[in-house]
Length: 339
Image (cartoon, rainbow, N blue to C red; front, top):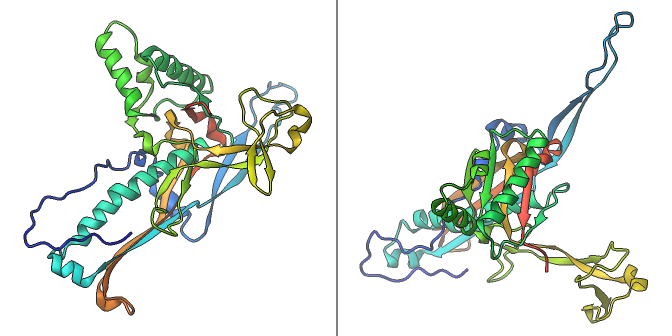
């Protein structure tokens, strides 16, 4: 991104900044002991224990024999992102804004780091193996529809004996507004399902997708993240699915099949991994592994750079967002239907 420091004669203490809120997924951060566990390796080992249930006690034979299974599940750090920002020394000095990197660092955190961290967190949870997002169309939702869906989700967790003390509801501001308006207009009607959550957090839709692409920064406009466009993969269908688009592959690329037939289905492709908007997500906090193993941020003066007469700011963040294998019942995702 090219520098945009403008020459000025006078400036005020006001900052013209982009509207963005801080990160909303930090409430899922794991305790500090997790960071210590992963200090010297790319992978961390999480203990997992299971024990047999009880059996009848016999006055002659005594106890029945069960077993203890104590093993480790391996989790790999999956987030490694960074950026280097440059500003020519004369641009900075002639603009009279020598503290620009203080403002720039804050702007980077608020407008880039926080939104991407949220988007990565929610997409990793939603796309984790064993998590199957429920497709629900809330485009024109009424409060009763949303409340019924939330009740079904909490009932399923209750029946699976998921602890209720640390369940967090992440929901779009639009749907939260629908529920708030309902409560105000209908004080006698029940919305007590909302009491089943220890916390309710509003997530802007721009950070709330089932899958995202982390852009590589190879050219202008290739920074940050976006909702995933998906990839082509051989279909696993054995029968035609009504409404699904199948593709043929040739030298001209992937082309939609105008009239698919089941006899050729083994040769068809479909688009998988498309990022769909999430309406809400319920997460029991202990089901999530989320922490940053390494965060580095530093500003370099022109004297420290050999080839550039510029100020430079470097930022890097290395961490992990994962789910524990035995706690997948503590996650529920509701997303928009696929195309």
